[in-house]
Length: 170
Length: 289
Image (cartoon, rainbow over all chains, first blue to last red; front, side, top):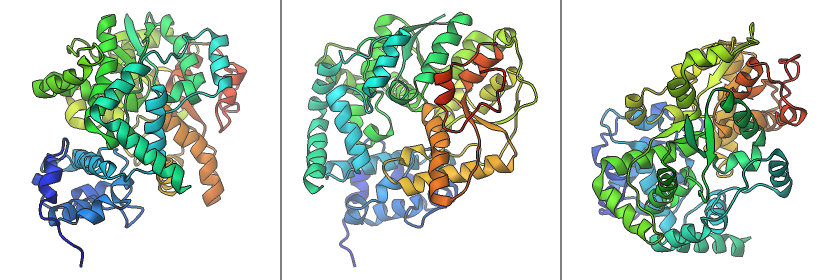
């Protein structure tokens, strides 16, 4: 039996985008419309909401569970309670990220954003092609400001710890 | 008509052909696009998943740049659209969030005022240019072609934001039909392309695309028309991945809506633009390329 954290639901509800958890009546309309839930038993939004309500904090935040969501917002539109399930998913992922639970693909995008202002960057040949077409140059003039913003919000620490964590592991 | 042109990350990195067609076609319709100097990534799904305040501040920084230009934004990518639209709407509606974000932005000498709108290519063509003007520029209608349209999730969802802006499938379908092609209804049209799970869970990402491709094949369409570069990538390149992993061949050409419009206007695609499609489009558009 896992350890229960009875404050977990309040913690999620107190996170931006998380208050919808308080409206969940476990009807399952989110799961029945979820394209991912139809393909794998590992992802089930109704079950994830239930785990938050029950206080299964470790299972929710330390596993892959929050990261199966496409954020397609189908569940958000279907919730009869206006519970914004898709938004609660973001709240849960924000808490998971603070604990360093960030998939490699997401960590790479966050790192690229911090280093270049963009999550993906063109290869040299694409830049050359742009220039030959006479399109505007891709600038990084916002870099200083982007880094200042991310330092102020503390996201720089999440970026460096999740990124360095990856590099060390591999 | 002038817009602050928000290019995003994916298009300059992977889909230059999309940008090329937009820059060729839009001036013909009286739309002038001005580049946004110093813009940063919109902070899509992945970044929003990491930190909320960073999302608001990064998107608001882009909104501030457009405010300084005194122009509404036009995006091409659904993810850019969703992020910028949501933040613009949230900060306009909730003064406490606006204050919180402006405190962060004060470090970089910016202030969100809430003076502009965020639009995507479909909004601009349908709402501002107008369907009649689009019909008027079609010199060589593409008749006899059946397509399925893929509006993509973030063009139409969440509905609590999009409903009041009257955005949805119908606008894209009307625009597509204006070029002469027939837009065929199909099952799972509202379903996600699977793109957001790319690089997070590739197996599931492919399986979602496959469901979409199956539905399109069942409806016997000859091509898929996309507006979002992420949907394009996922359904075009994705077909090669589905072939490799499931040994199934769909051979469904995927085309950016703007390319369809361009061909309807009688402007030929260049060789490098044709080759940007992994599923060949040459047979389908013979004589127009």
